[in-house]
Length: 138
Image (cartoon, rainbow, N blue to C red; front, side):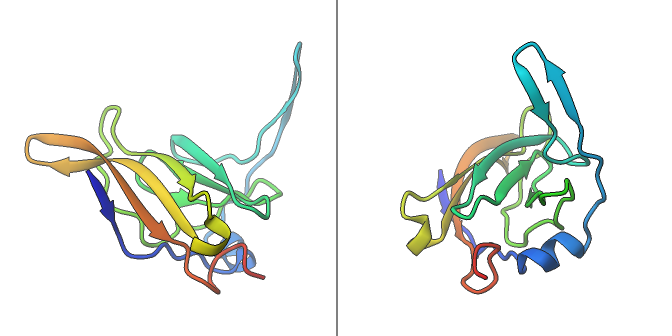
C-alpha cells in the first residue's frame, strides 16, 4: 500500500537540536578495520537513515519517530507528521529514503508497519519536509 500523509515538519536545525535534545556521549572504537565512531546515543531502536544534501542525517526509530542527530551526538526532538506505525515484533518505522529530486521536491519516503485488522501490513508513504522549516534551509 502506498499512502501520502501530511508534510513532515522539522524546525530550524538549531532549534531542533536544542529543543528536547538529549545530551549524548559520542565514542570512537578502534577495530582491525579502522576507527568506528558513534554518531548519536539515546536513539530507541534506530532502523534506517538517509543523508540530506547538506550532510544532515535523518534516522528512523522503530517506535515511529524520525530524528536528526547533531554533530556533537545530540538528537533532535521527533519530527512532526510521521504516520502511525505498528511498533511490535519486527514492525515499526523501518526505512527512510529521499526522492531522487529531493532538492526541489523535498519528498521523503518512509517504509513502515501499518496497523490493521488482525495485525499489521507493510506500507510505503511519502511526506514533504516543509519549505522554510527544514534543517537544510538556512
